[in-house]
Amino acid sequence: MEGTPGSRPLPGHIAAALAGAGGAADSAGQPWTGRSLAGEDARIHNFEDDDGTADAGYLAAVSAMVSGIGDEEDIVKALAHARVFVPIVAQLGEEGHDAAGLQADKQADMALVTLKAPDGRTALPVFSSAESLHAWHQEARPVAVYAARAALSAAAEGAELMVMDPGSEVTIVVRRPAVWALAQQLPWSPSYADTDVAEAVAATASDVPQIRRIELHRGGGVGALTSRGLQLKGGGAGPELRVVLYLVDGLDAAGVQEVVTALNGAWARNELLAERVDSIEVKLRRAVE
Image (cartoon, rainbow, N blue to C red; front, side):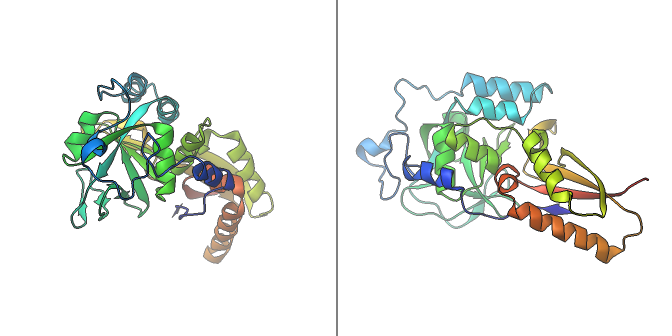
């Protein structure tokens, strides 16, 4: 079974940060709405002497993941200090698909480009270099921002995901909890490595007598594949947290469904889980007495 929480209101502290941070603006704080590509607006970014190359720290984190010694937590730590590029366009045509198979929304005027992930959620494409952005969309203008500002823009656009370098050799999906942490410039740990999450899940299960034991693991959708088929430890968009429930023997289908429904309701009402867990898959096992 799999469950992916749908769109939910931003937590108050993030909404407050957006209200004072100009999230839907460029790196100079200027709004996108009504912007033209003429004159000074044609400048690709506001970082003096920026040559458009990828941030060295981010490249090192990606290299470590490809080598099998890094993970998605390292990627997000690197992004916390990285300059990245977001694409803006004067006009997009009808809906289509990009090189990574993600559906592009129809936009008009000067706008951020957003994508549709396979699960229907909105994603903001973000690029480590101007070159990778240009290879993805030759007509898009690269605007340099710190990744924290890109995350604020993602939240302002209702995007729950940031997709790093779509269409490139290594594409990394940054999930909603990590996007929110970047937007607030706070540290982040994935839900499967978060002790607070483990305690919250255990607490929600403590009142369900049919559950004998519970385990938390990395979800089946955490990893990603490079364009050459190399398996990575992170960067995927599928289920993030695997919850294994060991149930008493003898439950029929209706009894099992009752347990799962009760837990899903408890998880949805738990503020910490709603904020820190992107998606959950549930696996059922029979408890051995």
